[in-house]
Each structure stands twice: as C-alpha cells, then as structure tokens.
Amino acid sequence: MKRLIRLRVNGEPVETAVPANRTLLELLRDDLGLTGAKEGCGEGDCGACTVLLDGLPVSSCLVLALQAEGREVLTVEGLAQDGQLDLLQQAFVEEGGVQCGFCTPGMLLAAKSLLDAKPNPSEAEIRAAISGNLCRCTGYQKIVESVRRAADLRRAARRGP
Amino acid sequence: MRLPMFEYAEAKSAAEACGMLADAGPDAALIAGGTDLLVRMKRGLERPARVVSIRRLRGGLPAVARDGARLALHPLATMAELAADPLLEHACGNVAAGARAVGSPLVRNLATLGGNLASARPCADTAPPLLSWDARVRLQSASGEHSVPLDDFFTGPGASALRRDELLTAVEIELPAGSSGSAFLKLGQRAALEIAIASAAVRLTLDRPGGTILAARVALGSVAPVPLRARAAEDLLLGRVPNEDLIREAGEAAAREARPIDDLRASAAYRREMVAVLVRRALTAALERAGGGR
Image (cartoon, rainbow over all chains, first blue to last red; front, side, top):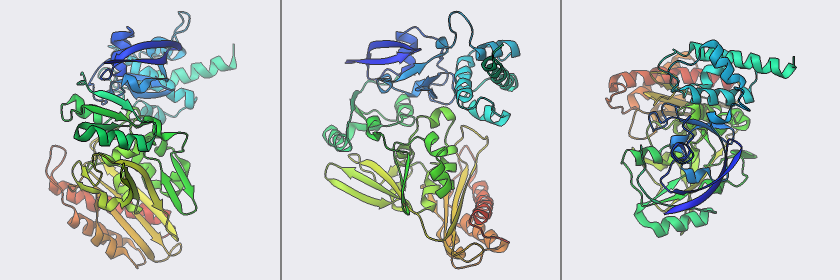
C-alpha cells in the first residue's frame, strides 16, 4: 500500500506516493530521477548516499521516505544555482578533489554542512566532518584541500569584490 | 539493497505507541533513527510485519534537561545532539564522549540514545558511560510504567529488560554530591566508523578536590555479553586517596573481571590486556577532572 507524502527537495515542494519500504535514497533516485546520491554499501558505512535532511548530513539509505515527510532535503543537484557551480563545487574542480566521482556528491554535502556551521574550520574539523564518507581514489588529501579552498572562496565572496 | 515490505504507522504519543505495539503483537518493531533496524531488515535478520515510528514523540523537548541534581536525557535525542550538548558535557562528560564515538557524523545525525541502549549491543558506546553514572531507564507499556537501573537492563547480546510491547521513555541520572570527574576511552582499529574492540568508561567522585574517593564506577564495553560493571575494581578504589599504584591495580582488577571472546576484531587475550590499559588511562583522566591527583 502506498501513502502520499509531502516534503521539500532542493527547495521545491514534492508530493508523491511511496510504499512503506521505500528509502529516501530510492525516492530520490528512482522516483524523482535525482541520481547524484549514490548507493554504495546500503548500510550507512560509506556515505555515498549522503544528503542534507533539515540541514544535517545523513545516510539516505537508512532513512525511510515516510520518515522524511514534512522535511527539507538537499541533494547535490540543489547546489548549483542558475547554471553556476556552488563555490564548494568550484573548489573541488580547482583543487582536483574529484577523481572517479562516486563519493563526490556526499563529500560536497558533508562539507557544506560543516562550512555552514563553521566558516573557518581547522584541518582536523574538516577530516572529522568527512569521516563518514569513504573515498577510494584521492587519499582524502585533495578533498581536504578542496574544502579548505571552499572556505576561503566563501569568505572572500562574503567580503565582496 | 531493498527493504522487505511492512506496514508503517506513526505514533503521536507514547501511550499510542504502546497501544500500537500491544495490538501488533510479536511481529512489530519500533523505529526511531532507523540506523540499526533498517540495516538488520536489509540483511534479513529482522522482518517485522509492522513498523511503529516514534519520531514525532520528541515534541519540542530538549536533548538534555537538568532539574537540580537530576539530569534527564531524551531517548529520541540523537548522538550528534548529545555529543554537542554543553549541559551534558559539563555534568557527565563521558556520556557526551560516548555519543561522539558512535558510527560516523552521518549516522550520529540519525541514531538515537534510546536505540543505542535498546539494541543492547555489548559494544554500544553510550552504555558504559551511562552505567558509570548509575543511570536508570524508564520503560512504559499499555499496562504501566516502571524504572530500571541500567545495570539491570542489559541481559545478553541484543537482549534487555525491554519487552516487545514496551517503550523506553526516559534516561535519568541523579548527579552525586562531591567533586566528580569522568572519562570514556574506546579502542578501535580506526578513529571513525568503528565498532569498539574494547571500551572503558569511569567516574570518580571525591569528597573534595584532592580528597578520598566517595564513589568509583568502572564500566566496560565489548568485553562481555553485556556492557559490564567491573565491581572489584570499583571496590578497590572506594574510600582511598587515589595514586598511580592504586589506579594501576584497579585497571588490572578490571581486566580480570572482563569476560571477552575471540572474534574477527580481536582476541580475548588482547582485549583483556587492553582493558587494563584503558581503565588505567581513563581513571587518570577522570581523577584530574575531579580535581584529584598529585
């Protein structure tokens, strides 16, 4: 039996009918066509399915779609505005923080949540913030540098030209 | 990985949740954060016909509330909330440290205190710290409510005093008089996303800074079928003015009380040795925080 739920995804209201056993990740990928969040392990160990739920990074493979009712979801598709990359995405491109790309959407969202709360994080804080997101390509160094660079870009943008 | 099908219901009050559990019988499961239940369902270890969500039962209540010497932790508080709670950090620092040690940031934003306790794993990171403060849990069913010392709550791996039709509705700590300090240490092969090889939570309460020990608690994780109080170690400390030798002896006593097993993470012998080290280090840190020491 399906149930009608309402939530906001990337700022847009969404109304959809889901069966009880649908996860938030399946709702995003299979029903809404938002394939940025990936299914890696499916058990909350890898972070490839990270989305922001009411501003906090969570493993969307461990959230029932029904439990996201009435809440705000941000996926990687919601980062770029008007065709312009978000400063975080820009920093990942410039610093080489992307290799195969499978972990990238999750890394970006975990990093966004960190920078929204702490505009000038230490390296230890960056590493802690992405400690639930596995990357098998980069060795993390370039990702940490990307987040560092994004923090600088954000602060520069806030000061204005 | 797909979840098997089930019926889903959302309770609007604790009483309604209890009613739903009673009606649904043995095939019902509670879901709060979902980080334990959904993994078990995906692996086929659990297949409830009905899942009762209690996510709306938090209302606007804070993660931690203090009323005089009484501290109440909300079972629906997430690990992330507890990890960052200033009240908890100040009063019972090792509980906040335990919450910080669970899973990853992504899991801690979902996982709840009630879930960490109700799943009753010997490795549950909040259990030894809460044992060190003599925490009690309140259990509610359609037929009434009662309070159980956490020390009597765990009965085996995955087993507890919580009946299938009961809801864990509060975690309560009565803060002791005197000068207290606490610590929690977790040993794993990595710093994040790790299940403890062994853990130790301790709490020392001194009659005054630099004084004698009024109360000592030593609790261990991942070295017995349940989160375990090391009572011989506690007895050794009681009434003494702590020093390095005493702390070392207490660590060794705790190691003798551990009942570890060999598994894929570590051997029983290694775990036992590490208990002595973890307890010694935790007691040293707790003593300093209690205002004791040289």
